[in-house]
Image (cartoon, rainbow, N blue to C red; front, top):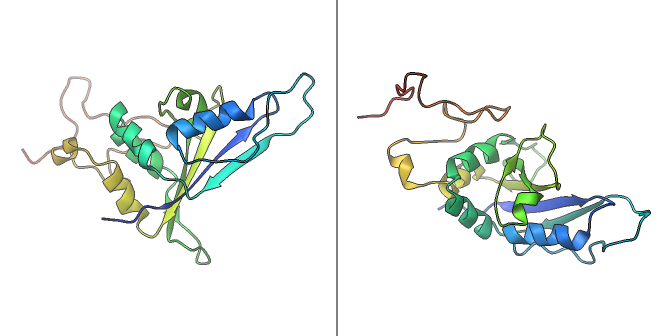
Length: 182
């Protein structure tokens, strides 16, 4: 079993947003996210700048549980590994990744991955992970019984493309484009 990566979670509260609501959204996915004194509701005109709320050392347990409940483990494998790479030699860990999830979906206890070039209503939650065995951890954390028939790994030929487009498993005539051992 691989070790759980160091996970940092952040979200930016814009001047027109209520900090407590933003924290509640993050806590639905990462219950141990804590940020002291988030900005409250203010009367117009609001004169504060955006506030970045960050919490390091967050547990992935509820996040992983929701991925399984929503049956989006293959999507999670791809989305979590899109920005996966080696860190510089001065870093504590060898691998790191970051990905975004919708804060609007999170308030309902749902996970919706957001691509970096997408604009989304309601803001985003940024998740940053780093570990020496991050690739193995992502593969283990997103494993499900269907992988027995269709094995998946980080960066395989079935991975989601950088623009979010899916890799088709069937051609237009319904023939499988992937080969299994059967």
